[in-house]
Length: 407
Ligand SMILES: Cc1ncc(COP(=O)(O)O)c(C=O)c1O
Image (cartoon, rainbow, N blue to C red; front, side):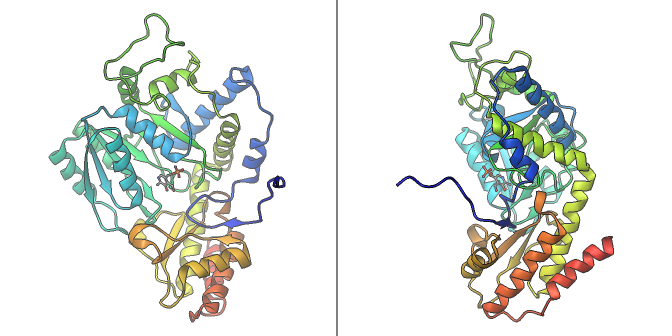
């Protein structure tokens, strides 16, 4: 039997991402397609690059999209920046640090990790000590690790890397747009993200930015494939071992040469462009402030419901909070009830935190008062249903108070 046309149920996505997209992002995605080299397409690509310079707070010419989900951006950065045998240092404070180490390992790097307990972040001095000991080519550091909700301060790390001649890459998938990120001021050589968190779009496009130093590294390892290679094109012996993620070729596609590498994912380009456009239209600082406010309202709301917040709250990302599932409450059953009865999705976590915490996000389009209050109403009802003793209306009132005080 042939299924009917796609008709998803109404959902309020209040997990750690993906989240409900901005309506204008969804409409941008249904705009008509144009050819790969249509002047409209190439100018939309150039506009998208300029918009993301604003989002990343950079003047990097090499600011573009990698087609694929966030890990495509991570993988492109890693395979293009890291030569086999290079030392890569990854400070791990959650699942996504492990992911960076895993991708670096597959890029045949000599991977060194330092770890801290989930729920904590690293003091800059600990990262510097590890850099001195390991002497890596690249430091790969997650900004916001969604698995634990923690936000690693990055502002001192670029200067440390510069002092020791280390390239500095950060995965800002979960944090970009909802928390400060200053690619240039913080000395980033490379950073990548995805749309499905604070940027308020669907997953499937990975914004990335590269400093001039990073561009030199990836360009020196570029290999242009036969069929489009031209006389005089370099062919480095230690070329990037992935064709799809060879950032040198991808840069030539986005640059004046318009090298026919892949076919840009047009509808995702439209989505990414709209995500950045709505963010900059509202104002970068204003969007971060909206995330901070929604995050604080949710934090006070869950606390007022008597829930214990996981981790070092002083280092929590603005856009997601993890709460311990109360004793006796069946975590997955209660989450399913949130979804079935209220159409609200919240998340559990991974590894040591699976079944121990729920993660509740307030990001992108859903960093809104009504989304926060509705989620708290539903959470209160479900907690009570499964035996937790929760104060009537306490969560909603505490969150509303935060909004009232900010008005
Ligand atoms: C910090 C971080 N990095 C990487 C990823 C991987 O993203 P994707 O699933 O879009 O490939 C995620 C996804 O949640 C994430 O939160």
